[in-house]
Length: 344
Ligand code: TXA
Ligand code: MG
Image 1: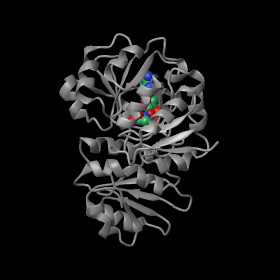
Image 2: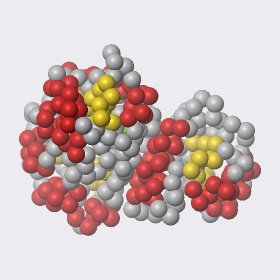
Image 3: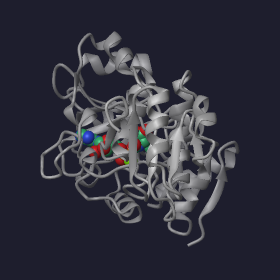
Image 4: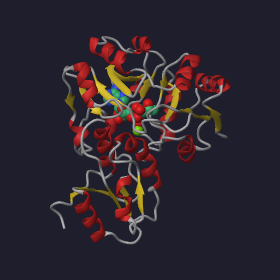
């Protein structure tokens, strides 16, 4: 099959993409977080194709994307007041809510669960496509399973050219990391994945929030987890990644000591001069963590090459969007972290 590249700034693309979705095909859609691999979320056969193309485990549920907040009532029941408050504050935007699923949502979409993740993305073209298709769009991040997410149409084509009907090119995803996921089927609400809506913002609306253990630690693959996607290896380039924590100077000493030809350093722009002889790649500015979130997956994809030995990575500290960057980078490193203040 030939994958069409549709402009995200052309009204005709909306019609073409919506027709493909209505006919059971796959379209990669731009969103403010990452690109999604979309299909009609109510069509079991179309959804099954997502799992095939992505190489995704069947028990890993998909997020349903809607165009407007009231549509959540078509797919979820017993929606708590908190969900309306969060939608009011953060939709359209990088927030997914886990809610009790109505029977209209196929088990294929929910990975066999009785809950469904719902999100209203902050992308005009994607919301227009969803409206024109008249169905909710089930879409995981468009990367091949286990690989860093796709934040440009080029990334999507790299992974799926010839395997999907179309990709809608809406430019680089603004946030660059997948949505924040909050489970509202229990009280207090539970943070399953940090993202563009920060824990501080959630707390401001909810008043209380439990952080799931999968956010901060490595999960035993045998264990039953709240968000099945969290037990799988994620975001990892081919070479092993190790995070070097500690002060700028101590980290640079450590990395220079162990650096071998063929290794790479993934660092902050402010640190580039320190690693001039270590083939460094900067993914953003430490003093502006939104640039780190926007640049992380570009960098991890660039490092996804067989000829790289080891990646030494620098990780931002603190809350806000940096909290989500830490989560993705730690997962890419399989939680392999060395504290340069005490190691040598
Ligand atoms: O920003 C995003 O969320 C992107 C864009 C395309 O919207 N999508 C995305 O989807 O990141 P995906 O499939 O790569 O990650 C969704 C995560 C998975 O870890 C999955 O297990 C979890 O959400 N999830 C989905 N539905 C769930 C449910 N009903 N209960 C618990 N976890 C769920
Ligand atoms: Mg994903």
